[in-house]
Length: 79
Image (tube, rainbow, N blue to C red; front, side, top):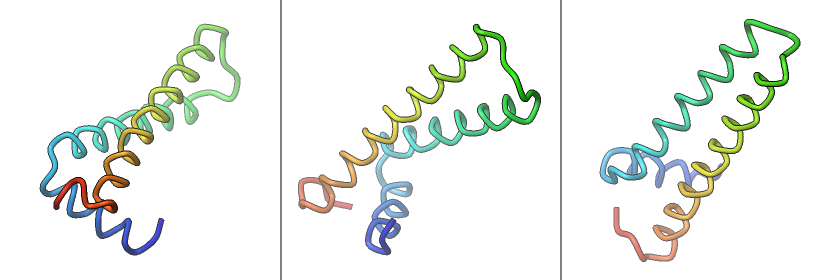
């Protein structure tokens, strides 16, 4: 992440509610994955599905955050 993107993310966290919610959910899911990985080395099939679902949701959130960052860079969203 560039310095400009870091600055944008900081500003968005302060001033853009949707971005803040996306970032908070992303962090919550990351913590959930860390808990899962720290408790086991091997997973049952249903646990693997859960892990993949969490990872997929994290990617969706990251994509949504990147769209917002891109709009800020283009001047479509002011921060």
